[in-house]
Length: 100
Image (cartoon, rainbow, N blue to C red):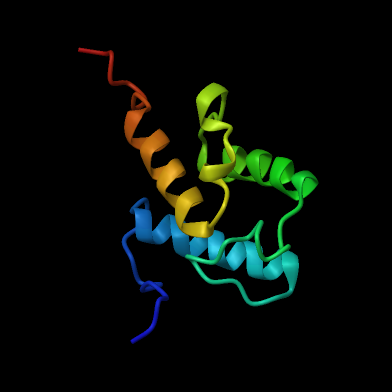
C-alpha cells in the first residue's frame, strides 16, 4: 500500500491539487517528497521557501492566502497545502455567480 494519491484525479479536486503540488516541489527541490512528510521538521522547507510557496500557491491555483491562513500548519506538508488550496477555492465565489 502506498501513500501516494492517484495522478489521474479529476482537475480541481483535492487529490489533483496535491498531485500538482508534489510534482512542483519535487521539481523545485530535486528531491523525493511525500504528501504527508513534515517539510519543516525534515529541513526541506525554510522560512524563505515557505514565503515563495505562498506566492506559488496563489499564482498557480488562483487563491489569496492571507490573515489566519498564513500559519505554519497550513504549509507543514503537501497534504496540508492541498487542503488549504481546496478549502480556499471552495470558499471563493465563482466568476459570474452574482449575475442573474
